[in-house]
Image (tube, rainbow, N blue to C red; front, side):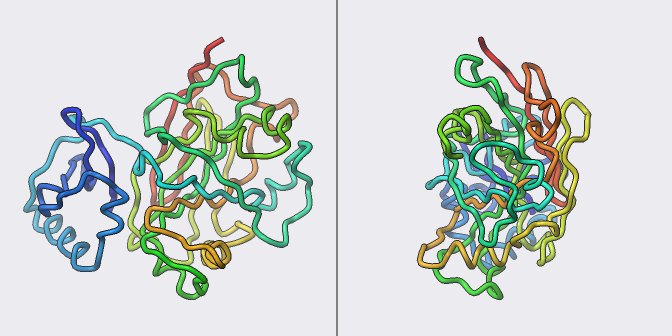
Length: 294
């Protein structure tokens, strides 16, 4: 199932995307919610079976997909997005900046990214040349946490997953170098495209091995598979949860493969009018265009 947040008649709602139809959950399941985080908190096996039933029976009220505006699946995360740096070996080798050496990490490297709001599929990534001149792209598989947990055993990690989406971890490389850390350069407004939906975990076998790609104006730049992550999803969930409670709706970005703009010689940073296509097998495609002001 593909869970979406969308805007219809000026109101935010949650639903299922199915064959170019939007199935509003507040109508078909009589759910009094328009929030993806609230939906995740309330989700249970019975609700999932009810959704499957109405889809299989085609017994539902729906909206045409072109009648709504997609939002990021979680437009306003309750907490910062959790991110992993240097989680693909080939990406580690291509990094050249003052705050990231080429040593393969022995432990996950965590940082957070602000998204207020996250940018939807089809929306613009905006920035000003007065703030940054070196904006880069990073396609990443994001894990959405489905229930609260602390000190989670890696063998039980899947139980805590709600689903998966795509995040483009847009990054200002010059700000990263200037401030000697990652948070500021990755947290500018419009720097967290997410979507187009959350694919439920039932759709993707665990262990997760998915092709992951990013193209700029049709030129394939990044191409790998999530099996190449240094730290896999069970390890990440277990390690991150040690002494720190994970909550429903938390978003964990699992790192990006090689092929980012700063890895080229000369670098290939984003320019006004560029189209970024982030693709992950079984999840979908997140497409955004760049808009640069002086």
